[in-house]
Amino acid sequence: MLTIRRDLVDAIVAHARQDHPDEACGVIAGPIGSDRPERFIPMINAARSPTFYEFESSDLLKLYRDMDANDEDPVVIYHSHTATEAYPSRTDVSYASEPFAHYVLVSTRENGTEDGPYEFRSYRIVDGVIAEEEVTIVD
Image (spheres, rainbow, N blue to C red):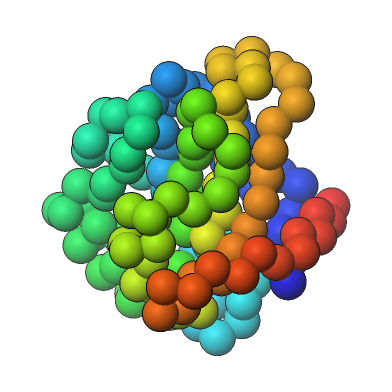
């Protein structure tokens, strides 16, 4: 189960709407071993694509160095889907390399950049196996 603060959910959704029609992506870091998402880190989608995302390799290296310096793990790895449901694609599964991370997907397919309903779902992806998990949003 993913327990996440409302302000972090709002930040992820805002980033997804801002980058629409391209996929948005980023990380929420938290203290090592805590499973507690705390620090929102929006990233740039180097692919600049509505169907695919990738972290710029130099940005990713900087991110991991920064997390190491702060004794943090990537607790949540998020991205958006702009035309499909919030469910991991085969590409998403092939790139899922953090076995303890929550993989959050937001779908902006219904409203794009506008306010309105969105899908917000979380998964664990380990060895190619997708397991959806409950999301609890707290204040």
